[in-house]
Image (tube, rainbow, N blue to C red):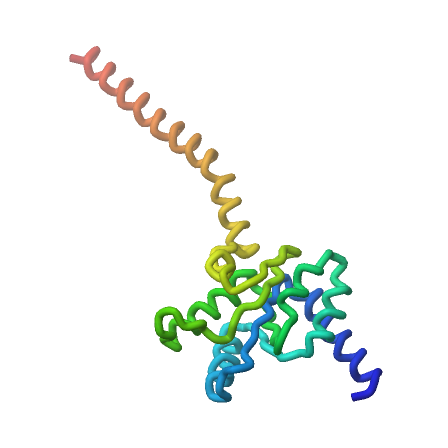
Length: 182
């Protein structure tokens, strides 16, 4: 591979890292071809992209992000594949969790592919023990929905109080007019 080809590959990878709000680094080196194909198929079906890169290319691409990514060096050992997500930071974690469940790993066994590190909205997570926490990260759409719900809640309470108060007032006036008529 020539120097220009390597630079083009690093440029492509850094472009993907900058355009995707999150990516996960995983190690699928000891998996069989059939299991890797199942993993790639599941990633594709969920709108994720999985590609294997050399650690030096990943390191050079991380340097272009404009953040301190030195913590990711711990994840750049052995073989590395990058799982990209445009939707939410939790989508790859949920996909990994579902893949582990589908493979039915025995208790105590290390599930494959191993999560080595994750970059989610400029936050860095290292190690497979972070997977459960990563599955609970809310995406932009979910956060906007919650925010809109919170903003609408007080207005709905005021409107319902005004409406119920109007009904009570109308009931009191009706009762008073019936008493005067009787």
